[in-house]
Image 1 (cartoon, rainbow over the protein chains, first blue to last red):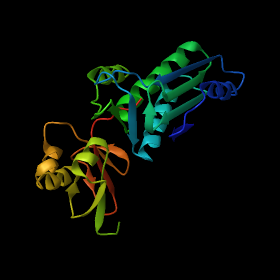
Image 2 (cartoon, chains in turn yellow, brown):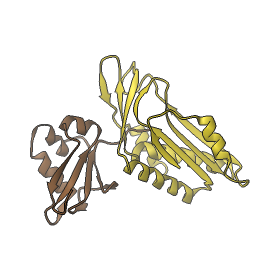
Image 3 (cartoon, rainbow over the protein chains, first blue to last red):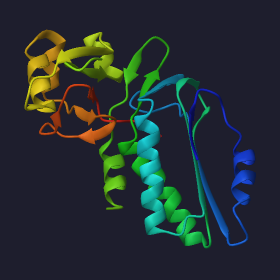
Image 4 (cartoon, chains in turn green, brown):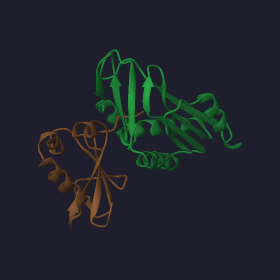
Length: 148
Length: 86
């Protein structure tokens, strides 16, 4: 299931929901991304996140489908926030249930890496009195391409 | 949107710098997304960046596309900077 929302989310509740994926599940891997104080700029106090409604969900569903073809994925959950976020706020949640830990780790990391370079979200960093659209990083492209 | 035009949408930095969320364009025969970029870039000013040094990503009907991708009346074309979510 994929949700794009302005509201915060509860990783504990999401984890409990992932547990309800049948007795064949032996591993759950989750990732949570937070707003950090330094990105392209230092002294970041918040972010503004924009997305392309409709396309975002289609792209992420495609990534879950790809992950399900490569690894044992019993259930996957992706939440991404948009709008104005403050320092230390949660931005993104990815959770994957698998029979074994290797598949859970790999599928979770793949979905997150590929999301960063293919899902149509854009971050604007906000500092005291400036705003700056974040540039895509070569290191993120490298991580995503490493799964090809 | 009608049967003669297509919709072009812009996101993030491009939306702000072009001061445009979306526009309608005539859908001529044998049109590609590259043709649309060239036509819009010819407006000059901030529009010139659509064929500038910075990469512009392209989607047609909400799927990633290329400058060679054909488009027709009723399609939704989008141009945006490389994505930075997560």
